[in-house]
Length: 309
Ligand SMILES: [Fe+2]
Image 1: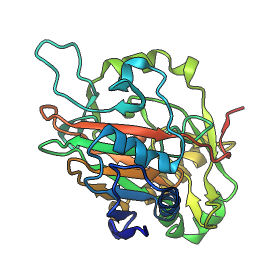
Image 2: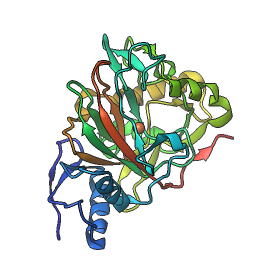
Image 3: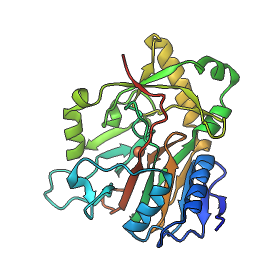
Image 4: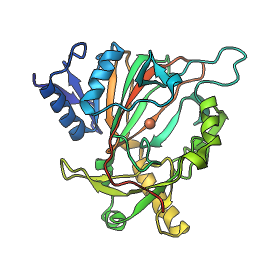
């Protein structure tokens, strides 16, 4: 079977048409999907995610799925599936399942800033696959930006300047404490139990990591602007004034409004993204809306990250 595709948006990604994920996927088709993943960065399989099995089957086309270390996070007893749903808290509950932020004057549960998964670790995961089970009445979009296009559209003086530079990243679950990429007026309304537990072990479990600002996608030779606005703390071996000025300029370039594709979910959608090449964000949902969504993470390592030191 040769897969049919159509552009997902003028910005990034393609929709894969006609994949039957209810049955095992032929090896040739799996290879074809992997090539499309590398070529386009984001793949939509509309309505193909009717079951956990289909979700796992599509995810495995892109690599081995990471097993979540916390048993309580497993969905349906499957260690490869992680639930990132938001359900409004019951009356009297101590905290919501997701942090609630005020973003652009509105309260949003499960909002996440623009980021690359695990950029605060030496190994960058290969990617992820999301499966929408119940879309919320409002909000819930997932944003993607193509870091190959972001590199291509950089002014030449910046391309030259960043060639040999690296960025230091440090994990911080509270986005109001991020140094770059915060929307104006961002406010944390309430944290979650998971956020509180991460904050308590930040320094012990999450030492800083370093990644180059540019790298070449080996299959295609294309250059990637390898920047995650969230978690970036500075340019390695650069004074703070210069580092802040340069990162602010690069982040402003990355977050221009005309470079984002925001996926409007339908129930049963599967969306895969290449974490080495696109950044993503979560729009969040109003705190009284339910959003049921699960994800897988694809293991991998592009081999260019390292611990600081
Ligand atoms: Fe993420």
